[in-house]
Image (cartoon, rainbow, N blue to C red; front, top):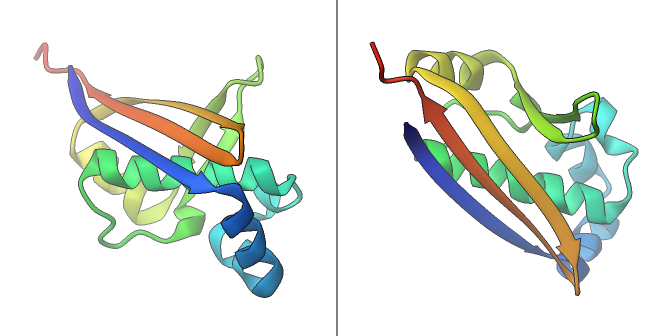
Length: 120
């Protein structure tokens, strides 16, 4: 059963300017493994993190490093959650998080769907 849906769009030029103007932003928003990616990939990951927050209905207790996006064996993106957000997701009974990201024509976008198993 779908528990939540979130979407976010990031303007690549504005995001690039923010990263260039505030170099520590890269460290604040992304895990060490994410930081070395090109700026369009970072923008898509930022959009995905925002989309997950929307799908969950808020960001109370969340830190940016608690939401990490890693590719699976087939290079599909997925979330690895840590700390408070991981506990929150587990307590809500969310069993799967679907994420898709894209970047084109000056924007990065992401969609997230959270699911829970309500068969119990």
